[in-house]
Length: 120
Image (cartoon, rainbow, N blue to C red; front, side, top):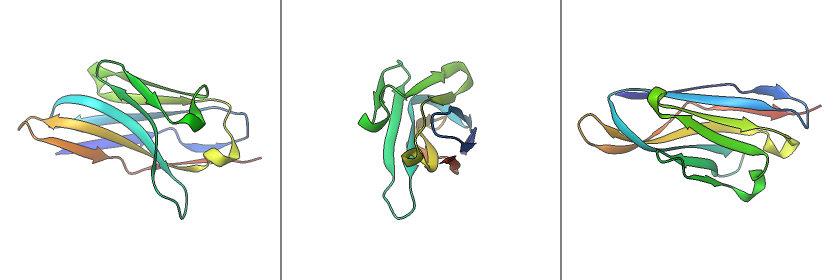
């Protein structure tokens, strides 16, 4: 069993900052990649940022220069620092991890989601 636990969402004013965290635990052998996705009401889930175990990163164009993804491989944790937040960043943010389990199965796992609301 593998669990992803997210934290750090909340309400922030436009131009403000938030930091999301996601910790993976359970029957983990390795985590080749982790990332963040987001979903607004009535819209499809979209990629925000990803990071590999080798620290290669990828960002959606809409967040480049404002969001920074990082990870602590020893803690199986991924972070996302979100700066210069805009109202259009208001979404539920989901952590994703591509995990090799201790039984050597390669599976995608999702967190429960954390709400980020940007509003004055």
